[in-house]
Length: 150
Image 1: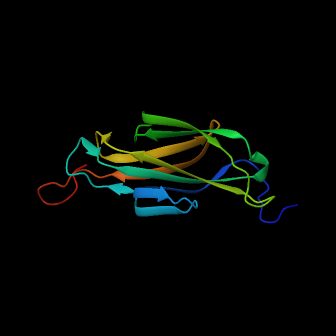
Image 2: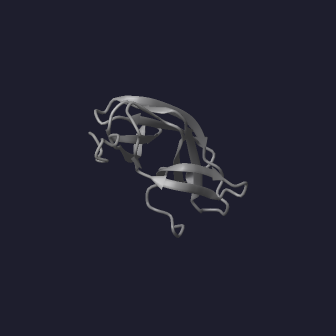
Image 3: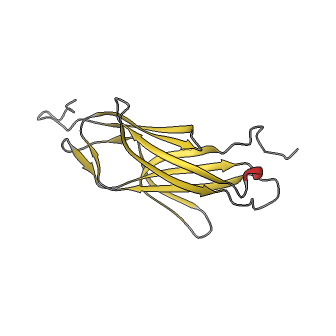
C-alpha cells in the first residue's frame, strides 16, 4: 500500500474557485489573484469583462497516461445551461512512483452575459461524472438609495 493515497483511485478535485486572474509557472505553480464568489454589476444585463475558473485535479498514479474528458457547464438559477466547455486532459506520470498526480486547469472567460441577478454555478464533470461545483451570486445593480435591486 502506498502512503497518502486515498482508497478511491478516480480523479478528484482538490481546489475550485473563480478569480480575477490566474496562471501557472513553467514549474507548475498556480498563481491566483482576486478570488470571488459575488459579482456586483452596475446594470443588468451585464457582460462580465473577465474571470478565470481555476480547477486543480488530483489523480491516482494508476490513472497516469489516461485521457479524461473534462467538461465545465455554467448554469443559471433555473438550471438552464448558459455555456459548456469541453477539454481532454491527459494524466501525466507522477513525479515519484506511487504518488498522486496534480493537474491544473485554468479556464479564462471574457464577456459572459448575465441577464438577471441570482445564483449561478459552474458544474465540473470528469468523464461524465460531476466532481464539483463553483457557486457564485450576481447581485442586482444598485438602486438610487445604494441598495441592490433584485
